[in-house]
Amino acid sequence: MEGKNKISSVGDVDNVRVAVRIPPLVSSECDRGCQEAVKHVGESPQVIVNRSDTFSFNYVFDARDTQKYIYDEIVKALLDKFFPGFNATILAYDQTGSGKTHTMGTAFDGELDENAGVIPRIMSDIFEGIN
Image (cartoon, rainbow, N blue to C red; front, top):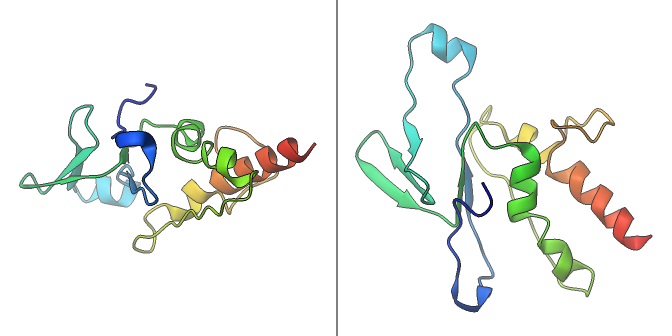
């Protein structure tokens, strides 16, 4: 799955990159017969909304992509810039109940397991890097 949905920029100098994570339908949506409105377009970093509008991003992740995979693809490389003194910001934005807490990992239970999100993973890597 390495790099499967990433747009590379010339010289890799993009200062802002946008990633989209398409969450699975929750059980109440499945019970009501809802269908996914946003779908990942093949292996490209594009989504199609309501079968009509296509949008491109730097990264697109779906329900099959793990927390670790997402972290490794979009966050871990920021540490290479962070330790020499560059600022890095990761912003999660979406409607209430869309999965930001899960992805960022603010519901961390103390175990760096498959459910650990961005925040506990990067904190672990920062402290490891300091050592």
